[in-house]
Structures are given as structure tokens and as C-alpha cells.
Image: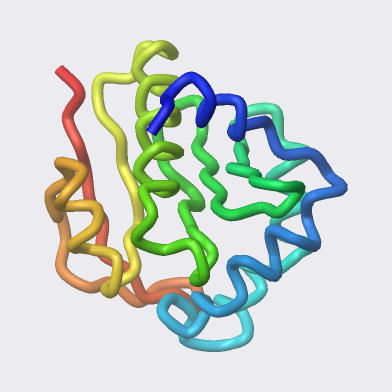
Length: 152
């Protein structure tokens, strides 16, 4: 794969992307949400709020004007969203987007990255060098495992 070409597919998300991002995330909501309160944290209004938050860096991977994957993180190094459209899984798109975000977090001076992983995504994060720092947690309508990756 031509890495330089693939970087051209990554861009900052904008408010107009919120509906498409919500549609991409929707199939994954059952992996996280325990109830409506939890589901709402992954729906369009919550995404719009993240896109407006100056401390959140939200990126999309786009091919032919189709959003294939998304990643969002706080300046502090906490990963908020990382999803690949189900039709684009296992094509290396998520890995490219992850590498871009990890380099960005490192450039921001972060010494570690944290994430609240769905149980189903734990193995993916472990493949990226994360380790679990908690057992399964159920809080605020969501089910997740706290994970961390040290960058130094």
C-alpha cells in the first residue's frame, strides 16, 4: 500500500460528517451499551458535541467520499472513538487510521494512551500494544474494559 496516498484519505471530521459517523458506529452500539443512556453516548448528538469540543481530535478515513473508519481522541491521550465500517474490516484501514492517531498523540507529548474498550475489541487493542488495567466495568450505561498503552 502507498502510505502517502493513504494519508490523503485521512482528514479531520466536520459537523457535516456527524450523520455518516453515527451510521458507521450504530452496528457497534450493542457491544457497549447496556441501556438507552449508554446508547445515547454513541449517537449523532453526542458525536456532534465531540466535533465541537476543542480538546477532541476527530478524524475520518474516507474513500470515494465514503467514510470507512473514524477515530477520536482527547488532547490528553484518551481514545474516545475508534470504529471501522463493517464492510471495510480486515483491509488495513483501521490500522492506518490508528497509526496516524498514535503519531498525533505522541506529537502532542502524551506518554501513554488510554481507552475504554468494548469487550469485543480488547484483542484488537492488545494487538496495538495496549494492556488491560481493569476487569469489565459497567458504568453510565456502558460496558467496557479500561486499557492503556505506554508510548515511552
